[in-house]
Image 1: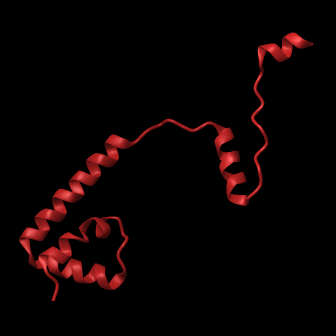
Image 2: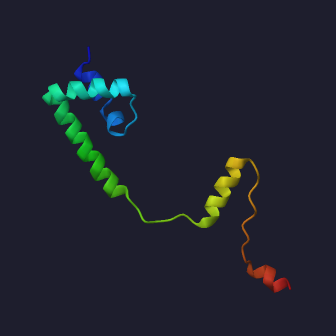
Image 3: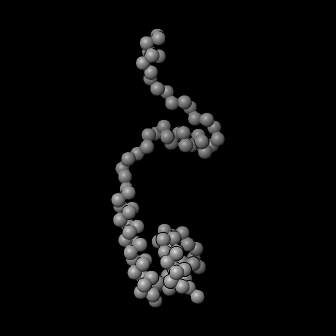
Length: 92
């Protein structure tokens, strides 16, 4: 038997599509019959939407980061980042 506590502990996972088919269908069936859990799901869904919209950003990481991450994943050392230093120019 599915309880309100069981459902409310899994609502966020349900909204994020993290539950398996069996758990999702149990939760869905319970929410269809339970006004309290329907309200909880609505509130959490709205909160998730507002948080998602608020946290959106158009900032992009520098391209060098992608290369460093991919190098770390592949297990090799990334090429050093080359920086122009005034004293290197001065020595020439």
